[in-house]
Figure 1 (tube, rainbow, N blue to C red):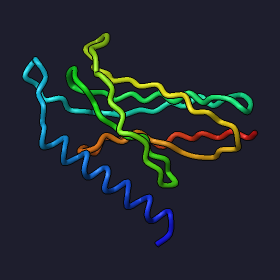
Figure 2 (cartoon, rainbow, N blue to C red):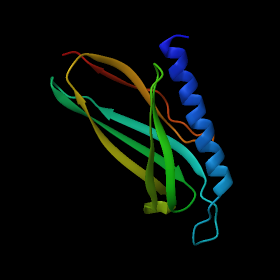
Figure 3 (cartoon, rainbow, N blue to C red):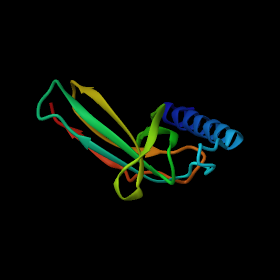
Figure 4 (cartoon, rainbow, N blue to C red):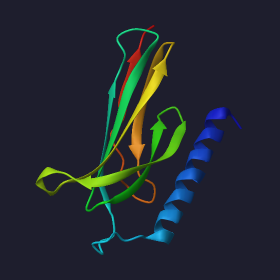
Length: 133
């Protein structure tokens, strides 16, 4: 079994376990509404030179306030997290959980990442991170 297959299997197990845990808890916030993630977005700002730091920001839209769990997934098979962010109400009645992470870049990278919310079908589009050192 090659490394990519093992990594993919580990990601599936992790996502399944988190999905089951989220459904088992089904926590409701103070308003009595069950928190439901509705959309995910990811933005990446690459460094201008190496070594440098890429800024990765994840946004998860929800229907109310509360904690949101999610993973960052690299298209080649790596899964990072879980991460937790607090959804807060913004302008126009939008509820948004935000997390920013800096990634050290010291060698060439040509990768794609996305945000995945376990236990749902909510995921961002793939976002490239390309840096030539």
